[in-house]
Image 1 (tube, helix red, strand yellow):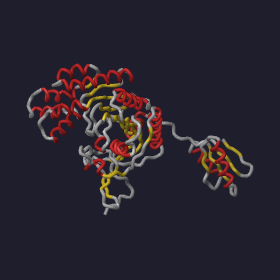
Image 2: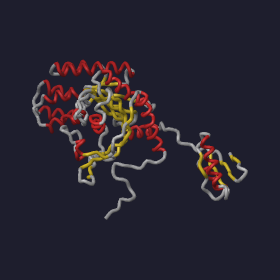
Image 3: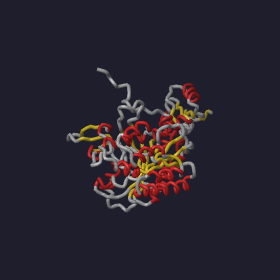
Image 4: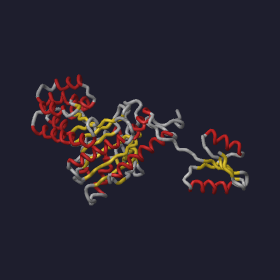
Length: 396
């Protein structure tokens, strides 16, 4: 039998030193940003009952969740998503809270994608949920906060917005099984034009299939709306398009022209979204580091009908982009090391504590002789050695 005591499970990794500094720096920057906008932090359990993610609308396939049982034999999962547990809390403990609610979080989610090599099954997410408003200004607040989140890291960024309602309205007009609709969604998401055309051609040619064929190619600036308006089959879908156009124009004015694009091919797999879809990217990292949107019906599945919009930041993805672009936070620096001659150990501990009260980072030297302490300080680039021997002295 093979032992696995020296390695981590697939999709996980140990983080050391500088990697931890990068992660904490990302989390602290985003936490400050969110709280400056009035968002309050909440933490949900890492373990949830399976039922939380097995609602009438199955948003997460059970094969993508890590499952276990509790002491009573009930089925649990490792939290695969932060929004759904927060929806549970809003519908129960916060049901009587004054709206709107501004909530933020920083926690790990766990998902398994067996077909993807190099995957990360343990993903740190930090994000916001704005609960209780259907107004356009709520969408704009979340979009501008997403743009500010990307801007925090000093790299070129892009933010894409779409509207899931356009795709849902189109695909509902097809008389096909749900698995076929899901296949169409996946082909639009990956912009696989040949396979998409093949499957839609088999359904016959009409205004709906024609619009779905062109959906993944409709991305760019404001010119997208003029192209899209010509191919939409009816006024109800054009209303959604106009809704998106208004938000796009306002968001471009807020965030700066060129930083936001529109993509009608944004059709997230997590289909609790009902309106605006948001994705954000950083220079040098191919996958999105921000994902979110409007989900007006999700919380109602927990018994409280209230609209919401939000996004999650993939901290792992931002860390990879930072490392790739070499924009690293300054490593922690030790200002002094305190060496104790035999018999003066207690005094050395007190002396180190006194220096820390002055705002310095101080280590105690764990060596038998002063020369070893000096060598250690040189190796670690510590500028000062403090010797405690009854007369106490400092060495540069």
